[in-house]
Length: 315
Image (tube, rainbow, N blue to C red; front, side):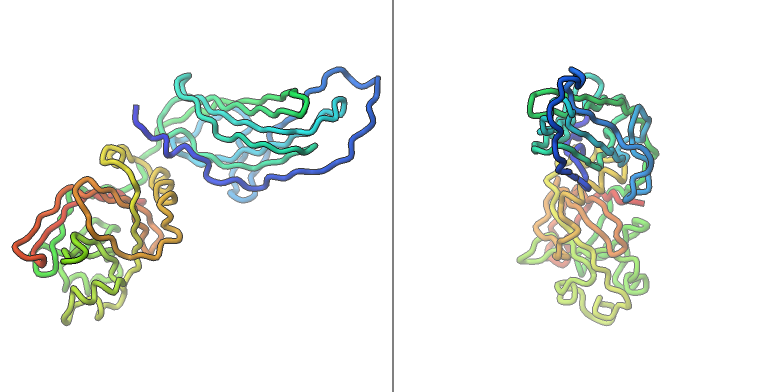
């Protein structure tokens, strides 16, 4: 089974609301049942425009979905709500605690987004609300995941050469094409990064707007003369080569890129690349992707070195 547990975290939590309400006096005529009440929200989640999941449903692998929950203390017990625990059990094999939140309130409201399991199968979701007296309310539903059509482009064994190499030095993730410096200038709006082997930086990929490329690629066709200089951003991922190979859908890349903090990264180059390294990137067009280094070739001089990689990018 693929090791994709890093994809199973919560995307975001929004709208957790507690309401303080006055408690009614105890009444001997109240029902003896003292468990809290809990319900799923129905209708459309306002932020995403998609329907809440409130019962058994079929989703694509890795699909984002929203759950809304409301709960109240039982008036017979007058015990505040103290804990919500959400667990997900995939194919009766893997159990993950998706949320374990503690509080002390008479009522509770929550909207929360998750990613469906990244492999096809069934997953039982269980929601347990506990009050101060230890009484519990429980809800559950089953999500059946089906494999989605691939939503990424894969460019295999792409080779770039350093600044004096006869091998092209520029790359465009929109079409997987490499360009020599003259053609890169003519297609500058497409170029996401350039490669060079620096004495200090080693094997390096850098965005066209990075100051280093002006120093490395000079002359009449250098990036300083381009009409467009895209600001691609890079970051390390910590993924293994095998985990890279398992990636098949855009939703997986989105989570990886989010974990790599690409939304706040300011660096536009990464140096010291070695075989087996996996990096995330975000293009100026907001497309996210991952790069696996498959080979580095040291030239007789740094200007003649080469690098090979595989790219997976959102369509």
